[in-house]
Length: 268
Image (cartoon, rainbow, N blue to C red):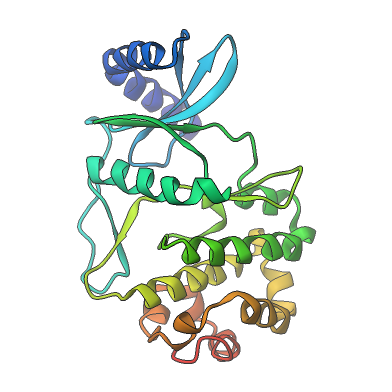
């Protein structure tokens, strides 16, 4: 029953946005010189509507569209590390992040934009969250790919603030990782160094979940600390990250893990 209700809701949301979707199809078709259809994604946990730009059955891009019919971000408590942006600001934020990261093969490539939509290259890669559910035994293989990608993202002046396996895509044919879904901006009080440290800790907290390979993590925390030690920059190590245990309940509930992580993050 719940799945049926969700399907009906999605169909209704699609119908409300249909007139704008048809306009965007024409705009993108004119810009790219080919007949583009926008196919709504079957599910969407984003604040925006996500579509696939398709030509003759081939997916060419992912198109994020601001929708007045979807929920808008709610205010968050002042102590939160980041806050969800409003529609147009959210598109700008993701476009800017991809513009910095795509040249280094760390994100999809930004292709086209208008006031209420952006199109980025289509990657047929699995999200790390789904990959880990299906291949929990490969947890360390995934982490060894993800940590250097996060460091490279930081080295290019970008932070995420919602760093979890659902926002990471894995190329099945190489070691490439793409970082996606930049929907959060930093709160006024948080420094750039704190943002970088929080990205790592947000990932650590999520990786304690059993479906993410948490048992392997908990069985060998020392291995994780040694990997972090290779990639975390000095500025992040010295950042005051004591706020993180308040925001990340999975860390707060595991004081022994926090003690181990203090070997890297000295002010956790």
